[in-house]
Length: 213
Image 1 (cartoon, rainbow, N blue to C red):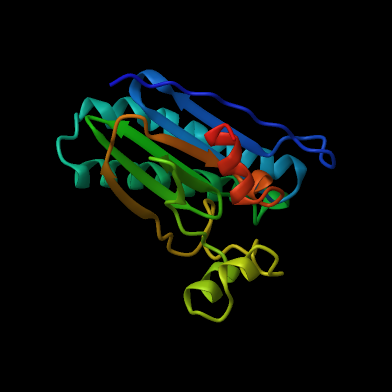
Image 2 (image 1 turned 90 degrees about the horizontal axis):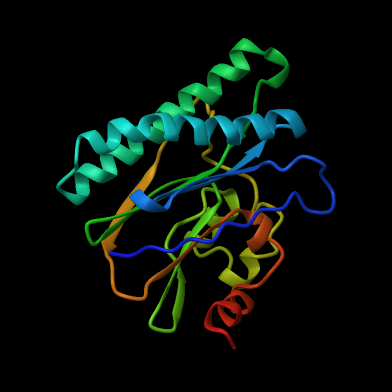
């Protein structure tokens, strides 16, 4: 299986510090986007520590050579659980940074299987056979309202609670990590992004770019 990866990040026009952090191990098919929160310095540190935690776990993950999809899900979930503990510890060691956190969208492409581990509102999309769809669910109050049928998907994109997280890396509460996977197909294109993209461009416009229209 041959993998190609392109990475792009930008702090935007408001902040001086880029709070997004990225991990890209194309050779081994492991990719992560983390978006920090908690002030300029703390948000940057939270996303950076999230990436560092997963990177440190990387060797251990693949020494185990997971054979089954559920084994990979467990390994990816455990890496984000460790990241959660590491980021939470930053707030304990530096009380001024208490409350910092990060999203984490982690994707593994291995042995014909894709596996996703997700916390927060960064997203993983799949573009396959001309169809562009969001694989992950946002851990936000707005998304909860959407799932309950209170608001529509179109209303979700502008809802005031669409960015209010219900789960994040660095939480003092029990962390719930979404994990799932599926079979890879030739030509699959995955996109992992923070809300720095999806908060400013419509999915239909992203589809036009990916499809070359």
